[in-house]
Amino acid sequence: MEGPLRGIIAGIAAWKLGGGCLSTIVIFLIVFYLLGFVRC
Image 1 (cartoon, rainbow, N blue to C red):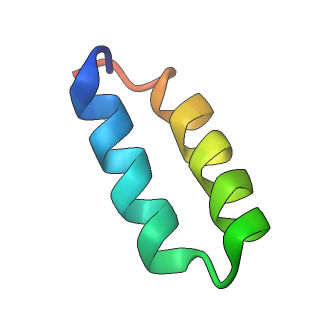
Image 2 (image 1 turned 180 degrees about the vertical axis):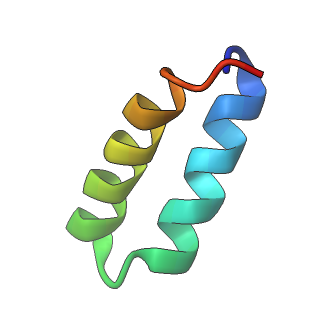
Image 3 (image 1 turned 180 degrees about the horizontal axis):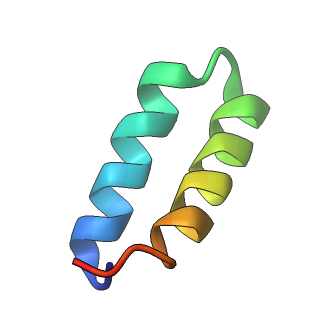
């Protein structure tokens, strides 16, 4: 997955799953990295 859609999805996932500031950033980075492997 490429482009801004990847960032939007990662941001939504981090916002929903993150409890604090640091955990939200870590979740965003993990989801953003994992979405790089998805080919849609």
